[in-house]
Length: 288
Image (cartoon, rainbow, N blue to C red; front, side, top):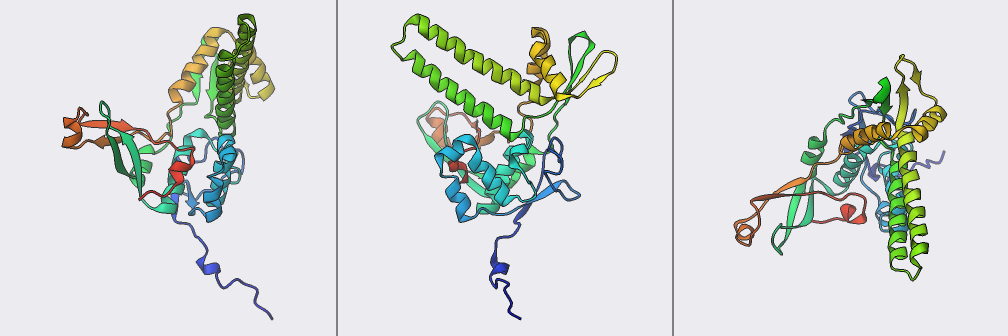
């Protein structure tokens, strides 16, 4: 009987590292992630095809490239669009680490100088600093209400990012156009209305439960959406403030960089911080 098994199968890429998800699997859609007992998922290196995908501008803009690479490298996550925001930085760092190793070079500008500084970042240490996502779900609202708020998922985050970019570009176009002032004001109102609707719509998606002053738990998405679109300013601001407070949960901390004597002599500080940018092809480009 003919053996159709590929003799090269043993040379295929394999799991390189295991990533402990900051979320510990919370806030994923049902059956979307498979973890071991330590809340870990396996991470494989990127393929050549994955690298090419990340060089496609349109796919990077709408998030499809990153979603495709995550699905390729972490098959334990069935639908990357459902990943909560608190896991995204760690997932991207882990893929970069599994593909190119522990060290990554970043280029920064030394504050108060014209010096460009290239430093090596230890990605394993960076992952350790992220740790568990301490997202506080419940927030007290006026009138004795309480709301449970979850992190934004990748689909919503990309939708907000792309729509905001498009509206800001449109805003610049209108500002530089030859339209009359009346026409410009009308366009501005339309743009700001779109952005406002996007903000409220995103808030409605993030609220998973409202608990009334009598203890009744409202989880029907339609009822919650109606509430969000009809709540007063005080309630809206309370939820917005809570979301803003939680917005950095799960994010990789800025890298602390010590300067050289030469850099300090040029006016630089003894130490400064630089934040790593993730959603672009530069982050996944090999730099030695």
